[in-house]
Length: 206
Image (cartoon, rainbow, N blue to C red):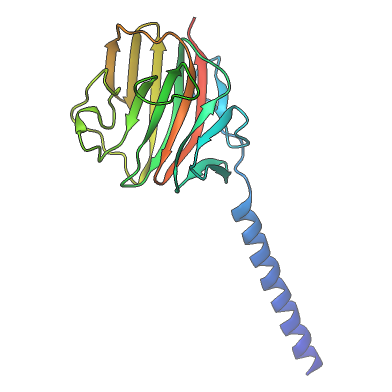
């Protein structure tokens, strides 16, 4: 009986240890991500922290397993620095009702939106799809509308003077010269619905 009890205790202890190890692996922060090909990239989100940003709004944004995530409220991660001419690369996950995207050259941190920034939109169910996913709102229309919901998507933005280019999953959706020319400003990652960002990198264009 004592031997049987000892074997059962050992098996139970092993099961508990394995369960704890599984929990630890689940909660572990992801390893830092690698930059895209080419030189000059600087991490905005590489899986280790959100130090490049200030949160604004009421979205419950946090870093979870190396991913910036929110599913409640509406808000932004706004860069602490201002950027002028650059290329930006990001991975984005959205659910089927999410309103997200990336705002660039925001000139006033208290006024973040298409009226005060360039809004590279990711919103598949926008009531007016003219400026839905893949568009630069009020600047460059999109058609056909890319589909981005319930999967990871790669976004790429090039802002070089008045020349703005936006690509979704390797497909160029906007390529425009804009006359209003917001020359420089902060970058804002938008959270509305279930939204996740990872692998966010930027490099200057000289």
